[in-house]
Length: 323
Image (cartoon, rainbow, N blue to C red; front, side):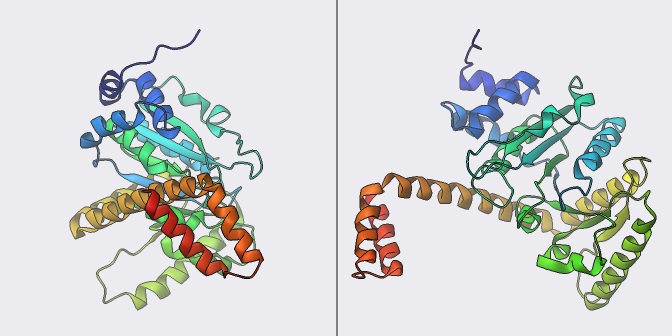
């Protein structure tokens, strides 16, 4: 039996009222560009802009999902409604993904104060789904605060998540070698809070100490600047320790964002990223639809009558004329 399709105005009202079924349908409509999805977003968007969006990233196996589960537990204990958007890896060939909310965090499925949703990263790269922030707007309008975005933890998403969140939590795991290697790829610099997970392991103390030493060096360099000094927090999902310190650090960062005006600056950057991502996707779709023009240009490049750069310029010009 197929579900009855609700009109956009009714679906939007259900989202604003926090109805789980309406939220799920709205997310599906927006994520898949279904008819009515854009109208739902237009109707609920004036209700957004209040939630604290937190990105959680780190290497695979670092315990991100277990950490998120404990954040949910602590948030619910404080009476907060929390939403989690978990980005799952996609096959580069089929585009399919194992959507993790079906196999993790199952203890919260009956709690109306928790909404967990998985999204496939698909082919858009960076470990982040195309509609990540757009779907977060649905949770925001429904009154969830905070909203957690958990990334795949591969490639450059450790850096990319910083453009989609007010606060970024970088999870590091002990036992992967020299902790100084965490400086690679600029990932350490994007962490507003750095979590050493699996704190029940003896080597976690060493990693936390080394990271704090690195932060001390950074603090000395930035002592004269009015900037946030990233916190290093050690947690253990097994022993359920350190979660309160993590939440306190995030609360302090949220307050700092508000007090300094950084909240507005980061929000502007996040929305700019969302708009640019949509434009990029639309241009890609237009490009893929222009097969005839592409083939002609490729033939000219193969014949060495045209350079690849000039071919790209002509393709862009053709797309501009179509719009």
